[in-house]
Amino acid sequence: MIKIEFHCHTYASKDSLTRPADLIRAARRKGIDRLVITDHNSIDGARAAKQLDAELIIVGEEIMTAKGEILAAFVQEEIPAYLSPQETIKLLKEQGAFISVSHPFDELRAGGWRENDLLDILPFVDAIEVFNSRCMLPRFNRRAREFAEKHNVAGTVGSDAHAAFEVGRATLTLDQFEGAEGLRRVIRQGKIAARWSPWWFHLVSRYASARKKIKNLDIRF
Image (cartoon, rainbow, N blue to C red; front, side, top):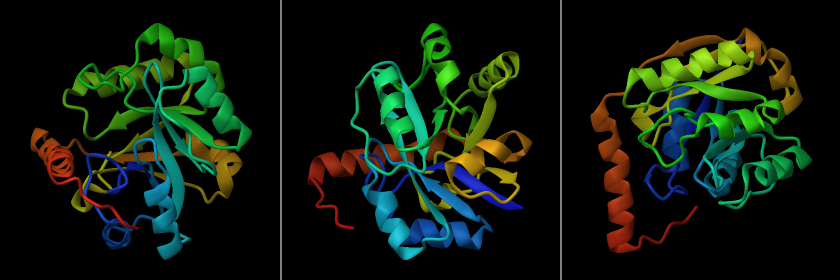
């Protein structure tokens, strides 16, 4: 069995200052076996992390579409932001990626989804995120879980960590798998371990975003 974290960020995201090496150390310390790094509209941080720990890291991306955010794993080529959901999914499928949907019912985020838009893409995704530790209100995660059950779609979970100390707050324990196709085969048998992250965790990403805007940080990997 392996423990996997599906949703976390490095300083390749506009609202994180976390270095790949720090994220890796935190994940290893917490017994995480696979870490999907899903920076906003970028795979640079994930690629840098994979060079440091190829066994642990799965290259992913959190992609803002014209309707909401898609969460992908086993990404080979970066997907640009603000395409239609259908075009984004098409490009991900061409590279064999595993496709989930970020915090689908979080009404407080720009990356949330309207239900009709989510239903339009549901036949073409592998899962939706049924628990996100950073969702501010419990009803957002509850609605996602109920939606997944109603429509018989698999679920992923994630800490949505923007700082190293957050990583591992929401994980799935799964049978061993290889690649996106292997993940599809085992995803429904995953055992969830999840904790809500208090509101002040969001101050970490607010600070990171503000600092980058003010200082225009030169980010190197």
